[in-house]
Image (cartoon, rainbow, N blue to C red; front, side, top):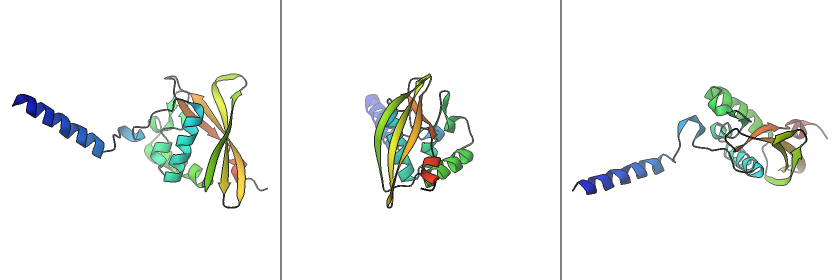
Amino acid sequence: MRSWRIRSLAFVLLAAVAACGGRTGSTGGVRPAGAPAQVVEQFMRLVAAKDYARMGAVFGTREGPIASRDPQQQVERRMYAIAEILKNTRFVIRGEQAIPGRSDAEQITVQLTQETRTVDVPFVVVRTAEGGWLVEQVDLEAVTKRQ
């Protein structure tokens, strides 16, 4: 009888975690990506989903995501502004290169298609102290400048 209760409790806990989407804290359970291009792809998918809180969990510095240091409302406003500029109908990761003098960072070029316009946007990604990758900078001027 006791083992049945333990198994039932384990099942209920598992079902509860699944129902919540496995989210924890303000970062929504998002972990830094294992590869530079992977974090950019993850970030761009969150842009499309308008998931500003989770965008803040993959945007940050070597010390970690901004979602873990800044107030949630501030993070969401900042990510909203970035997402509005990066709106696109299609994106393609075009290239990856080392940044001279920064062994912990790489530049990823993303080609965005916005209606009839295509633009290359440089992203800088940084390796965190824990070994994952975060988006550190997005060259928004590449998108907003007039051609």
